[in-house]
Length: 157
Image 1 (tube, helix red, strand yellow):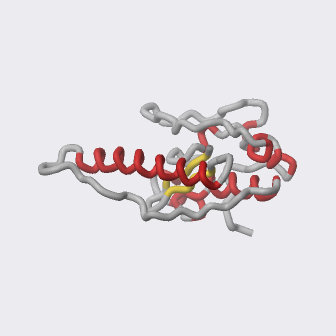
Image 2 (tube, helix red, strand yellow):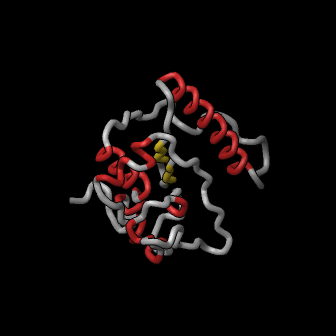
């Protein structure tokens, strides 16, 4: 799994055995995330704890079928902050990768060379926990198309 937290949305790249498993997994994720976000929003505020939906009841699912599509999806999710020009605003303009994504734990950056997990986050940073891919496309297949640079801007020509 890979993810990217943006100001107004979240990108997730997940694996599922079938549509039913994906739907159940997304429902569970949305419930858990809503509980955690509502608790964080309510912390320190007077009155009752915030409750209710956080996400619209929808998501866009796309089945990845080729190494090229897998590489594109990885680059899109991990570098989405560049697409939204968040990398041009302080303090993010001093970052090499998006610390609000799973980019820190992605082992496939072209810039790593032989040094796995090259970047170290800020002192108080806790990396987002992700599972390593189970499918060949997201584990190895995307590499057949070419490396992914941390400087790439999704949708840029």
